[in-house]
Length: 264
Image 1 (spheres, rainbow, N blue to C red):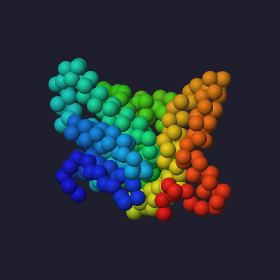
Image 2: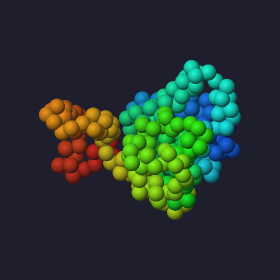
Image 3: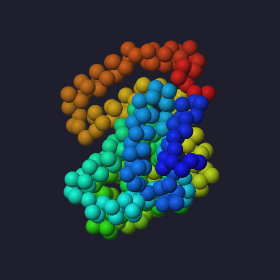
Image 4: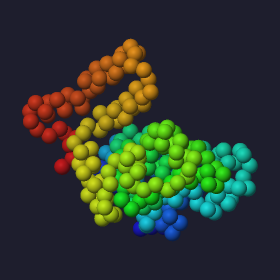
């Protein structure tokens, strides 16, 4: 693997794998890694040939949060410098969260602070049972501010009221119970098999319909089920029924054949 802070690999079947590659510092975030990930997430989100995005990490840790040297430099920043610095992290996480394709996090080790935010921003998360998690910011007199929208969305307000305030370490079983992880595997050797189970399921589904389904979630989330929501959802399914994808999917089902988008 190269010395780049993050590495992007495309498979022949359209799977983009982005690997955090700073194992010597537990894949901790610095300015370079944040900018590189932000650009990568934006780029793969726009590529029509990409069917899914996997976010993995090299070494023993998934991501330890902020790099210590970066934090030392930030201590001398002005408030405006710190705001710009934080906005870069916000851009990176937003670009990941907004990718209109399925995203899968493969957690092979500890994910702390911003690393936990990275997990929360993905659609699906698979972790080894030995992984540890922590929202450690308050121990340093800081806040889990930029990652909070994704973490609150992933594990809920009640759990955040505990883990934001205690900064305690919790294990993969608890992360699974909270909904941060969707699947547990015994060790790193099982991660690829679990990943491929999800990729196989995703590969059977219409790419445009999955993108629209992701957008649908945020259209209805938190809104009361009133006429405007009923109208909006009726409009969306009516529009989708007229798409080439829908016609192909229904025809393939009736003709008992694979749809054109199905990966082998």
